[in-house]
Image (cartoon, rainbow, N blue to C red):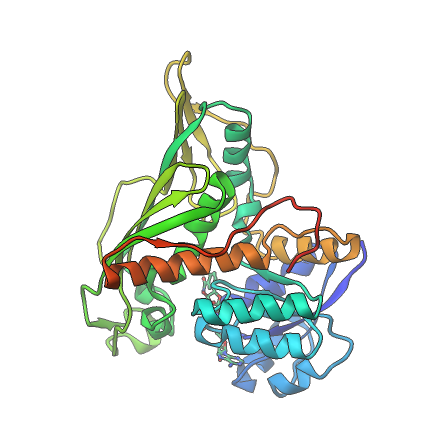
Length: 359
Ligand SMILES: NC(=O)c1ccc[n+]([C@@H]2O[C@H](COP(=O)([O-])OP(=O)(O)OC[C@H]3O[C@@H](n4cnc5c(N)ncnc54)[C@H](O)[C@@H]3O)[C@@H](O)[C@H]2O)c1
């Protein structure tokens, strides 16, 4: 398969799985890695046997690099992505696309103007779990769709992440950090959203790091951490999402989709695999669906690989920028509607499987 040279910016926690992606996806070649802190890039470069660049600018200036993989923290996503576009590179970014809808729109319009691609995580939507649920819906197994519910229930990443403060800044929180998995999945399953409303609260103003080295350190919370959202879709179905870092445990499902003939229990959208179970009239009890693919492990890199392949075939890639922008707009408007105490219509839309090569 025709490879593309990929430069990674951001040598943190998630970079490891992407640095392993060439062993799974043969069109990805890691050309090198850079970070704001050059020692971090050096450390990963040594561990994975790839070159490192002394700074972000020198990686961006390397003309042999065609794609930038943006693995920086959310507040740096827009700046790095826009710089990469200015250097003539396609970009695949970790979620979210940006931390503001304004920045997201600038990224997509610039990419279109320059005829460059934007890919946005999560690529778990390509995984066997979400794709099997989609096939059940498309095959009419649960009849016409009534609605869906999504629950991102947790106590926050400070229990395991070494540098958790960024999760509690504007542009993160449970909705912007984890919401993209749930919302991207709902969008794949139900199509574009028409309008949203939400109620958001910040339950705790300070959090404490619990993981190893910095255990006991506290940091401030500047974004909502407990969010209830309602979404009306253009397909005339309704869904809700709860996204929280403020609870202990829950037995609620990750996502369920309800139809006139049954229900699909969708697996954790943060992962690629199953099981996908469903209930239909005429069958007693829950059945486990046969997974449509073997993309079931930690397959991060699948979206980047699909984008590279689509650049060569001039087709639309799956985890595309307009999908990421629609997710970003819906998250921002969910929080904004909570402040305004109203419903807010969305101005963006998207399609999947379009033959155009849009950003
Ligand atoms: N950690 C996970 O399990 C996980 C899973 C899925 C997605 N993500 C996403 O991946 C991204 C990175 O998360 P992480 O957990 O690796 O964070 P991290 O804090 O471990 O690493 C981020 C890296 O980006 C670097 N950086 C920050 N600003 C920069 C800039 N302007 N220029 C260059 N480098 C810069 C930091 O120095 C750091 O090394 C986030 O968007 C996150 O939402 C993380």
